Length: 102
Image (cartoon, rainbow, N blue to C red; front, side):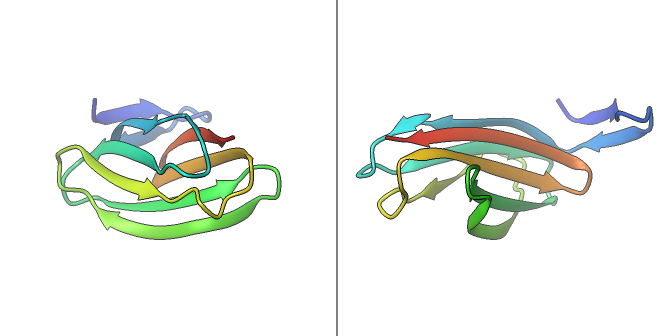
């Protein structure tokens, strides 16, 4: 799961973020969306939640990875119907997941 992979230019990228999942991937405005992820212990993960149509940042924060599965909640009550992205960034290792608000 963790280790190294080759980037587009062939250089090695340290993989520190493992799996990322979102549930539900299609949410009503009255239900929260939960993002679960795993990352190498001690890694700072920068999280960005944004609207892909307007490219508007909705939430931005950092968490320190524990090495176990972690999660955070996105409150959809104030979000307009549309498509949203969750971006997890640890240096050059980036994972993206999406969800829809109906």
